[in-house]
Amino acid sequence: MTPTDHPPREKLEKFLAGRVRPGEGARAVVRHLLSGCEQCTRVARQRLGFGSGGGAAGGATYAASVASVRRKAGKLAREVADEQAAAPELVAELLGHPHLRQLTILRNHRRFQSVALVKELCAASHGRLGSQPAEAVQLARLAVVAADALPAARYPRELINDFRCRARVYLANALRIGADLMGSRQAFAQARLLFNEGSRDRLELAYLIYNEAVLIKDEGRFEEALRQMLAAFRLYRDQADFHLAGKVMVDAALVKIEMGRPAEAAGLLSQAATLIDPGREPGLIVALYHNLAYCYCETGCLDAALSLLVDARPLYEELGSPANRMRLSWLEGRVLARKLRFGEAAARFEEARDGFLQIELLLEAALVSLELATAYAERQWVAQARRLIAETLAICRAKGLHREALAALTFLRKSVEEEGATVAVIQRVHRFLETLQRDPEVKWASRRPQPGS
Image (cartoon, rainbow, N blue to C red; front, side, top):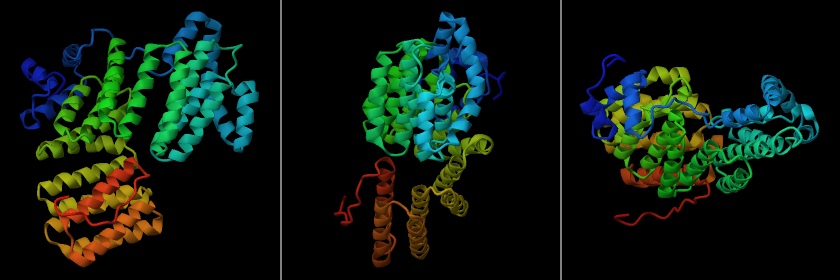
């Protein structure tokens, strides 16, 4: 289906209502919408409650704040533009100093006291979230110090507090990804107080409550997370920011997936496809394809899932991080295993496991290994499962995997040696490792499960 080959209006309406299954053409509608058809995108957005206004109204970045500055003072706006051009070099200079010296510079040197520098530090933190979470936290803390040092003689008080709020949101996200949920919660509490002392811009509010909702999801409070994401979606919708409204829907779909509702998640992802601007955040298209394929897999639409992953592979190669490319191989392995194409599935699982080990994502490597071990056990290939589990434990122990994960894998190895490779025991350990991803403080209970548990 091309941008000029439109789906029938009735099918588009059914698709937006979540009533078109993959085998009935949902994948084709998704591809058509993402190809850039303005006519069908306009129809879809109106169906979702958006007006006919333009796209990114402020982008929930700093554009709204900077626009306000421009309205109030043209001279300051020109200074902001000059500062933005100089910010990358200033950040590089700042990071060349020891930490205590960095703090002194930010608090005392006027050259480093600009909103542009705060933005640049936030962006640097965000860019390291997936690969260097500890460094992302450090950069976000520097952004907080830089925002707190913005001179009141130069910037309006409301603008300073907007940036102080935003820097703490970045810090909260970095702490969340680094598994410091309490620290993240504290940073969000500070951000809320500062929001109330700032411009109270609705896009800033949407950005704050959307990111806080992701933390709430990670804390396991799924219904509350969905309610807060819906509030953020409405704020973005009211401001006609299609793209960020779609981004919120992608995260709401992840909540549905966590709740074990893949069909509902697929409906949200299909609607998000009508809102996302691929040129504005190309990586989000990769996430949409991946999660939609996952939902198709979990609802038994295996051919549609595999076709979607084939469509998405060039995007992964171009835009995806190494970790996301490994997740693609992992999901392909899962789909192929369920299609009983076991040789191909095993190759994909092994590719994912080896890739995760190479980039030191040990928990992910262990999870992939257990999924492959489950497939072995289901086929009564006990020797292969036993060898894989022993090998996984040895590698992960040598590389320093989380202590509780090692305890669970050690239990599994002993169980397999004593009783053979039972699917129930492997899946029990797999579920624990998934829980450990969300809550690093959880403890492994080594007792054997009772019958029926």
